[in-house]
Length: 293
Image (cartoon, rainbow, N blue to C red; front, side, top):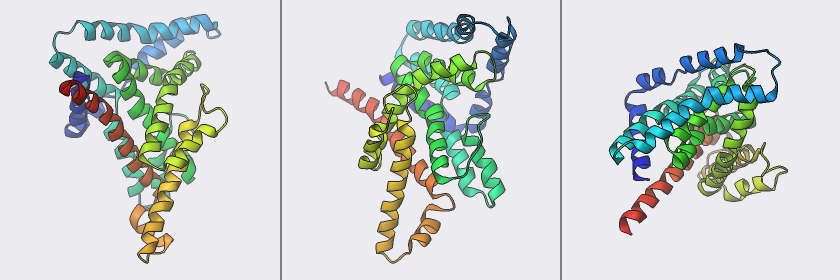
């Protein structure tokens, strides 16, 4: 766990210290070319078993090779360096933060719409309603922040790589896409539940807990995160506006001066950073407890 925590800190340092290098590293051109080549092989109307075999051939060899490497590397320093490199490719805290900042800094509606479109997965229609923006932000955070991080903590670098490769396959138009989305939904289920728990701790607890009372909250296609995010962000904004109203500011002034042109995104970003810090505190406490024990 100490090596995993060191890898996470190194990946964060690399992302903030060399953003252009990381942005270039994260371009998955070779992976997409490999997926496209596999998708062209065989008949277009192949059976499900054939499609799953293609997906396994696309994803599993590099994951298994990395798993073998991470178990054979000597020493915690080598494991931390390997984990940091894999996380730098799989994990994107700086990129998502920059995308949200671009939306809030846009000076016109057209620029704001173009910037907000980057929060949606490829091919999805970008919507500008506050609730839709919050859902897109938290779904993007699940894909770019919390999904790779959780599977890295559970399975090491191979887990982060598996999540990233499945996420790319789910976003690519190919015969493997539907099965990749099913596989990604399986990996996303514990991520969504853990994010909702963190949101309940870091934000409006009552509002977030109400998400588990929604129909299908524990199903594979759960929307517990989306429900918790909308309720949590709305509750946090209402609470902060009420605080500023006590000092004499009107709600409209508080929204404009404190939260900026996109209050839902601004507050959602703050909540996500608090959730991420909470997630990082868990392995830190485990390492500290082991050291004390």
